[in-house]
Structure formats: structure tokens, C-alpha cells
Image: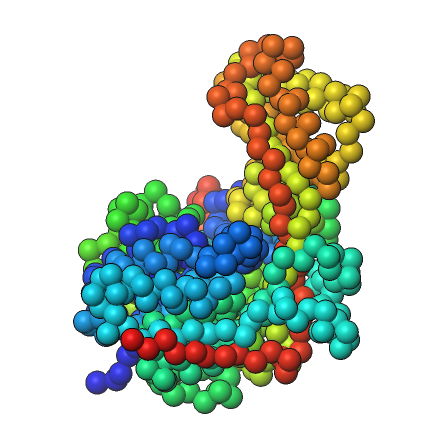
Length: 454
Length: 118
């Protein structure tokens, strides 16, 4: 019988379903549990937490997830790979160790910690050496925001995770690894693929891309025939059944809801896609135009034919910087002429802000129920029952944004009629931490694996 | 005849900075060539006029019966900078599916498009 390796996805972002990790290890046999916690902006949120408390800065949901899967990890040999370490992987490992002790399973938990992604302490040295860390989208030099930088992390690939697994880790905690590496590494480790076997590495990356958003490939957020997708309350998260030759099957545990078919998997494949011929990762460039899908029984899709080519000599760097303040205020206007009333209220607010001489980078108004999501494409909506007015401002001065938050409530008494929905109170001012994507030479980043043995 | 993209395709969208991507997928494999022919970069740019501030890029994935469009300047700055409800471009998918195609009646019948008579 051909050997297979099963990698289960138990978390598609920080905030995903708390039940999913446990359901993945209890619903049927799996070898690895993959948990993806880091979105583009997550690192900056974690950096702010770490500034307030040096023992924080990791995805704390992960500790609860580990507690829910300890029996499977300690007794049944399921191994966990997660980028929950955020900007403080060591503190994350310490918290996992503590939880393992409390659960009485510590002797059976060997934690591998991947670091080396954190470039924050080295930014000035890198700039001095001529690494510009220019914004990949705008081309701007990092110097324009240097004094406001909060975090800077290189996206690491699969090899350090493979090293941790090879050294016997059954829980691997990383900082800023690529989402796809969390799936590819267990396959690479299990099958011993060569690091220049581009087609197999690309297959591992595609497998990772399909399951990195959790249920988004197994019936969640699926537009295709959405009314007939069964039992979303009990949705099954996806699992990769990997084969040595690089082909794999996407499936889910029996007796779970949702649906895995060519349509649901295709929707996930095109999610957040750029140039399909060049899906760039630190380990390989995958060609999405070579992916073939075929139904392989109920809730099973076989994936094959994928090719890849050598990666570039750069790593992507995720930099977060303070970018001012923002606030959002809302009010609801009722029939008749709800949209017309909301439009008048928007003009009144803007006139008052002008009168106060307040400066903002952006004032953005939406009319929910009329045009908020599709804008001008929505066309005329008629005399709808209600419209929510939603006004947002963003600017460099906290004071100006604070003042804006006082300009919404007065409209209840001194603006257009038929207004309600102010139960939420005054809008909150939020600091904006923005994302700055950059590239850095691979040779200046050295991943480090540390074992935390019982 | 006129046919809504919604009736012959499905789609998913996401974000990368201030750019939204929309992957649009033929509901039936035999409808993909029609999509590939009709959904030109210019046609999609016209559709989103007034809703995005930048240009449009187009990629073909015949292996998946899909096209991928990148809509630049779609997200009010993108990420945390954006003040939009759809800051992450999640529903640009159905915005594209609002597009209406003009398909010759004979071709619509031959392809058995929804609503084609005969």
C-alpha cells in the first residue's frame, strides 16, 4: 500500500472557529494538525501587545487549541505545526509548556521553535548596508516611515520547520512563516523530497494554499450552489492526503458538514491570487496554471500535474508602521426616502467638519443598504426600508479624529428626520497600524531552530 | 441575447494591499471559452469604472476554467488604512458577476446557456 501523510487544517486565521482543531484530531486519523494564525496585520497587533507585556506577542488562542488537542498529541502521535509564535515564539513555547504541565502531558511534548524572522532590531543596520526595504507596491523608501516602524519580519519557508520535525518536535511553533510552509513542511519531512524537486515542492505549496484558509475550501464562503451545501453548522475542515509523488487528495472527516468538490476547491485556489504562473514562496515558485483537479468520490478531490521552478534570491518582509488614527460613525435612517436623508446627513457632517477647520487624509462615506459593498455598480435601489449612514475619517492627528467622533450623535436631534440606531455610543478612535511589504536578500536572514524538551 | 455573468460563472475575491483580485470560474467547462473571449481586460475595466482608481490586469487559467483579474486601487488604501466596509475586497466577486454579456442567440443555444430557448 502506498504511504500517505494526512495534514489537517484546524485554523484559517486568528479568530477562526475554536472547535475546529479538536474536531480535526478527533474526527478520524490524521498525522499533522496545521494551524495558521497570521494575517498581514496580525504581526503588528502582536507587536503592540508585546510592547505592553514582554511575555505576550503570540496568538493566545493557540494555547486553548493545544489544550483541546493534547490527548491526540501526547498519546496518538499527532504533530502540530503552527505560526502562532507571532513576534514572540519563545514566549509562545513557554506558554505551551506550561499548559502541557497543567494537563499532565509535558513529558510527551517536544516543542520546536523557529525564529530568525524578526528583522526589527536589525533594520538600521540593513538600511546602512544598502538594503532599501522599499515598499513593493509603491516603491517608496522605508526612510519615509522609519521612525514609525513597529515590526519587521521576513517570511520564512519550510526548511526550518522540517529541521524541527527531524529533531523530534511534535509541536512546531514559528513566527512569520509563510502560511503554505506550514503544510508543505510536514510533506517534505515525511517524504524526504529534495529541496530542488521543484514540482513536488510546488505541489506542497498548492496543498498549503488550498487548506490555509480552513473551511473556505470545504463549503465555507462558497458561492457555487451555496443553498445546497449541507450542514454548515457542523462544517468539516479540510485535510490533505499527501502522496510521495506530489499528488494529493483534499477531503474532510466523515459525518461532517460542508462540501468538498472541484467547485469549492477552485474557489479557494483563486483566492488572493496574483499572477497564476508565479506563486512565489521562499522555497519554490508554483505555476497555478498547471493544477489539475478531479472528483475522487464524495467530498474528495484529487489534485495533480503541478509544476514549479526555482525561487528568487529574495524573501518577502512584512513591516508594520504607525499610520495615524481613524474612527467610524454610523446612524440609521428609515423609510421614506431613507437614502436621501442619509445623504443630507453626510453633507451636514462634512460642512461642520469643514467649519471646524479639521484636516483629514480621508473622509469616506458609505450608505449601507444602497451602495456600500458594490458602490456605483449597485445602481438605483428604490425606496428601501432603511439605510445606514457610515462615515469614516483617517488622519495623522488623534485630536482631529477625536473631534470627529463628537459630530455624529448631535445629528439625532439637529439633522434630517427618521434617524435611529445610535445605541453603540460615540465612535472609538483607533490607531492605524499599516502594512509595508518589502523584499530583502535571502542571505541576510538565518532561520534558527530551538528545541524545548521536557 | 443578454446573459448575466452570475448565471454562467461563480467567483471569489480577496485582497493584496490596495488591490482586489477576482477569480471568475465558468459554471460549466464548455462555457469557459465564452468567458475568455468576452471578459477582456477592457470590458472588466469598463464594468468597474467609478469603483476603482487604478488599472486592471487579467490572467487566464484554462486548467481551472477560470480567469483572474487584479483590480488596482480598489480598496481605499487597503488593509488597516481602508475605511471601507469591504476593506479586504471580499465581495468584489459578486460585483463582477453583475456584468451582462451579449451573446448571439445561436451560440447561446449551442452552449445551452441558461435562458437560451430551443
